[in-house]
Image 1 (cartoon, rainbow, N blue to C red):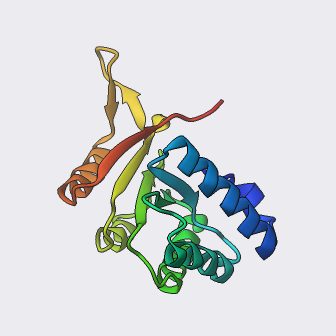
Image 2 (tube, one colour; image 1 turned 60 degrees about the vertical axis):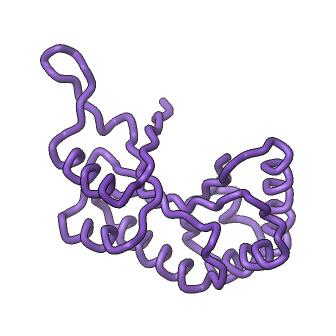
Length: 166
């Protein structure tokens, strides 16, 4: 289950609380294993405080929170790193929080990768546009993507393929 990023960014703290209660209640009703959230660009302190209150009160139950970060060559990626680190530092309870690194078609320099390899990455997402077709018409990953994926598989990351929407 994925939270709508534009909706969450425009909400006030009380609205966030109501929205999270609805989503968490709905996830528990459906028996969902995890809730995927993009790294919030604003309001990390309020977001972390809300999540901590849910963890402390046991409202999340067995539902895991997966923080999704897009690994791409852009200025936004460096900002996402900073936002993720801030969110991780603000969360007092990290037991049910996992990290998902999503590989994009355009990858940043290798120095950026070394930052993430130091983190415990639970999930690696591969967007469908990372694949190209070989001479036989089968989908294959570019060598740079395959190298990153191998490094993340050594960390026992679970692989998720993401479909891009037209």
